[in-house]
Length: 82
Image (cartoon, rainbow, N blue to C red; front, side):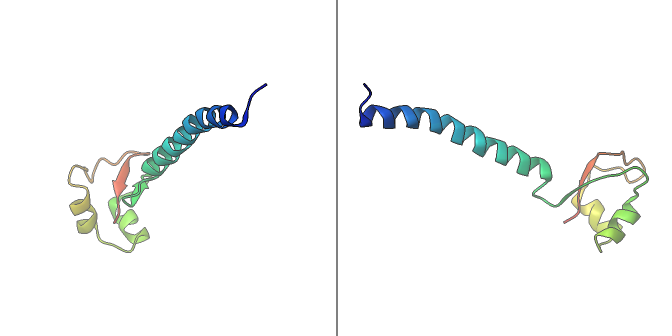
């Protein structure tokens, strides 16, 4: 027969890794969602159209994304918008 302290130890050993896995999953999903104001470029998007969507300017987008070539945006590429 299992007594109460052993049951608690068993429960903690089961729950702790599950809680860690859950927290890590949430962290990764938030990171992928782009906590920094990311936008995923869609086919046909231009910096001008993206700037209009987010009520900003192309110059601001270029400042936030210095490595982005404005003439070579690709679908699914992530850019910062704020």
